[in-house]
Length: 82
Image (tube, rainbow, N blue to C red; front, side, top):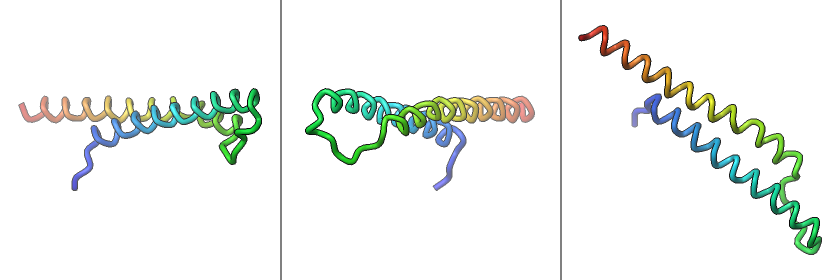
């Protein structure tokens, strides 16, 4: 199976979005647990979710950069062979 830059870049963007969704859920459920303390289970802390949420945009930006560079490279190859 060949891996393309387009696949890698889009996968980074999807992972970034999934990470933000998980972190938002963790933060929202922590706020609910502070109101209802009976539901406290072994869940990720709010601090780790906030830290992870700050990293997710970096993954998204990296994915976008991979896609942009792939487009530029393909354009250069087409210009060279045309």
